[in-house]
Image 1 (tube, each protein chain N blue to C red):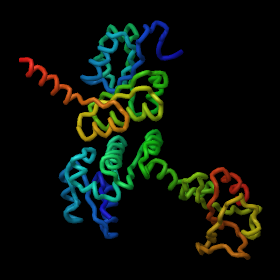
Image 2 (cartoon, rainbow over the protein chains, first blue to last red; image 1 turned 30 degrees about the vertical axis):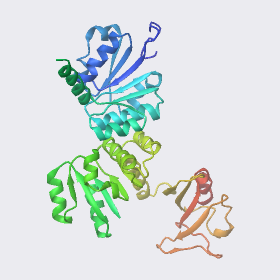
Image 3 (cartoon, one colour; image 1 turned 120 degrees about the horizontal axis):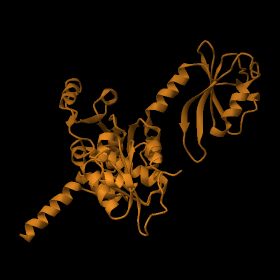
Image 4 (cartoon, chains in turn blue, green; image 1 turned 30 degrees about the horizontal axis):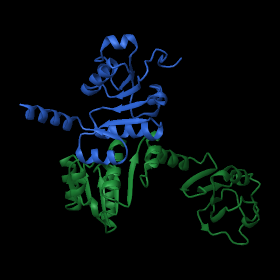
Length: 150
Length: 219
């Protein structure tokens, strides 16, 4: 038995792993599920996973996986070998960089995205071929857009 | 040489002492101001308080002119980021970092960290050396197009190699025996007449693929 039943997966839908079920991770998982993707969310604590939208979890669209996103065994348990997109969204830049590089280099995941807030690290990981996204600079940009439109 | 050490814990401080005693210039980065102060009391103004996984802090520690960066934090993730920043943003020639998980050791190698130190493997190897159960102990891996290892093989009592001269042993092709250490601890380079005795430690450089053959030959 595989972790997921993909038979009902709509065309264009992606299989996604999100590491870290904090504010960003849980909201992101909900949005991805809403858009028709299948999401596995990894976190080291049960409490964090309990914040996932219960409807999607009971429908099997979102699957919580209790485990460490920088552990090979746990990543395999989350069936990392068959995902299209990997998103490392914990609160730690270093953890995100490690997890995303494991996905990219050890498991050949097509696209690995990591949340990297500190600017010097962000440019490094972009140069190394990861998609690095800074939550703080995105928030700042959004606020600046609002300021300009006023 | 200027060396930047990240982490002023036990490993970082110990490496720092050794480098200072060997006449090198060092900078030690740690987030904890108290640790930095303790180290400065002992070694002078070497500490930089800050996060060694930030480019700005690495720059303050003089990473741009460093010959080596050594990451000794408790977290594999921090050590990886520090080494990658040092390597790619500061072009440091030698980066080395502690790794505590085998999964990560493989990744560190793959990502070009020059000399990752796999702590679990290191400790386990020391234990193997301390316990004379197994005849063959790996001392050092020699990387290259044909990976080789330096090992010591203990000549066990009853081995067919006892009494034979080293030069007459049917060694695997390319194997070197630079040293034979007797039971009493006397070490000598084997010559024409060196014959093996029980409990001799034979130091050999051989291909990884030939280890079993060496074991069969000597133990």
